[in-house]
Each structure stands twice: as structure tokens, then as C-alpha cells.
Length: 356
Image (cartoon, rainbow, N blue to C red; front, side, top):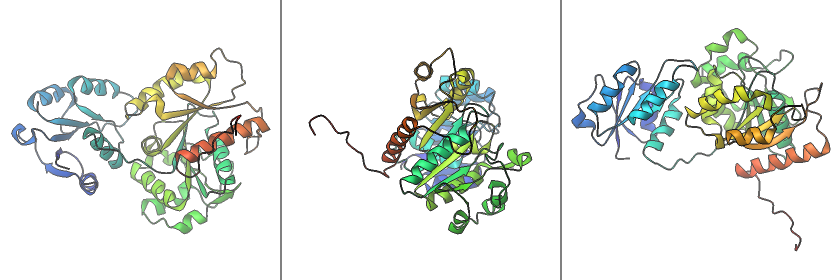
């Protein structure tokens, strides 16, 4: 890669990761001269260059690509800054971006082919109680039924997704995650549930904000090595390190929602847009689809430009497993097969035509 990256304010660990990805990074203690960065990329943070100085920065470096890393955490407030950057022709990285996300962005800037492959399927909800965990468990169960090794990770940091404390859970495993000491045996010791291995989520909800993006990334990478498919329940609250990492790292993103949540989906889709994700990057699963609503599931998906993957009926009360009827189960299995084909874990089946 001939492009050089002049970085100001980027931490050394991130610089090391970018170098390992094959980029040439030149760390700066002050802004370099424009004569050095012409035709190259200048990467700066909001701590070094305030938002108010962006116009001046763009004017000073007319021949350089600029990547602006906005570091102030919070799901609100940076949309206007992203828009400002767009207007100035400056690339933007939102808060909580991991080194992997930054590397992906650098490749995108260089129009490098992204060889993004993996086996992580992320489930996100449009609001608490929408059934994100139940639907994630349904997919884990049906994928496991096909004979694949499946790990389901409870990564909704605000809700463990399990009724009772277990010997192993995200918060109990956290010291090993923080110390980067996970081994295959740790995944062998997960809760065995309907054919798949399950890590219940965080029971210590007071620590929800303490989790770091690097911890979640490490857990996901370790799980990916130990399973054919990793299903992760990232929950419905964007203000969590796991939610952000899940959005960035998932190969497939499932949004569990309902027409009643149209007002919630709008800001969620806008937030995803600031992470370079588009409506077509999501598959929508409409839960409780038979509850009377003004807007139909298809109209909702059409309005946002997302693909409607599956509609599941409302069950007034249900145990751990959704009690699907034969028709819904067949639809779910068809979608699971399509999912496995997209991950390269199953062969495409040709539909039998009239002449076969």
C-alpha cells in the first residue's frame, strides 16, 4: 500500500493494529506540513482538532484525504458533526470505533477490496422486550439442528436474557476476557441448551457501562474460532460497547422489531448510517406480527428500504422456546438454510421445477 497515513492523537495500540494491517503510519506530535501530506491521508482526533477548526483544516490540506475521529462518547450529538464533515469532504469515524472498524474505513478510503467474511450473526432489537433474545435462541436452535456447532452469546449488557443466575455468564467470565485468557475449554463449559452452547449475558447490570469495546471484540474473536456459527444477542440499547462492536463486526445483522416501533427504528437507522451501514445491511424480523397495527410489516420494511426476512406471530405467553407452528417453523428453517448458504456453511438447494 503506497498511501501513507499521518496520524495525530491516535493511541499507540491502534497505530500498531493499523500497521499490522499493512498500512504505513507516521505518528505526529503536531500537525504536519501540507507539503508532506499531499496525496496521502491525515488522520486526526477531535481532541487534537476541535470541530470548530475543521473548515480551516480542510482549507489548509486541500490535496490530502482527511479522516476525522470524533471521540466524545454518546449516541446523540455527533450526527451534525458527521454532516459537517460530509460537506467538507472529510471522512468521519463515530465514537466507540474499534481499531478493526478504523482499518475497514481506511480500506474503504483506498477503495481496497474488503474481504469481509466470518460467521458472526448479530441480533439487535428496536426496543426492550421486543423478543430479541427469544428470536436469537430460535435461530441458534434451528442452526444447531442442522448439525453445526453453534455458540450463542448474551451480549445485551443491560439484560442477561436468562431467568436465573448460572455458573457461567458474561460477568463471571469477564476477568478471563479482560485478561485475554479465554481458551476452547471456556466455551466447552457454557450452558448446554437445545443443541447449542449458551453464554447468558451480564447479570451485574451496574457494570454495563464499564465494558470496553476491545473486551467484546476479543470475546467475539475467541468464540468465532470455537464454533461454526456464532449468534450474538446485542440487545436494544445502543449506549453499550457490545452494541457498537456488534454493529461493526457482524456479517449478518438481524433487526427484531414490530410496526409499532417505527418511531424507534428511524433514529436507529440514522445511527447505523453514521457507522457506514445502510438499510440493505439489515434483515428485519417482525415479531408479534399478528398484533393489530396501522402499518403492515411489509410497508414498514419498504419505508426504510430493509429486507423483511421473517414474520413471527404473537404468543401471549411462551417458555424459553417460541412454540412455532409447522408453517412458521418451515419458514424459519428456510431462512436459516439461506443464512448458512450465505456464510458458506451449506450448499444451495435448487427448487424442484415442473420439468424436473
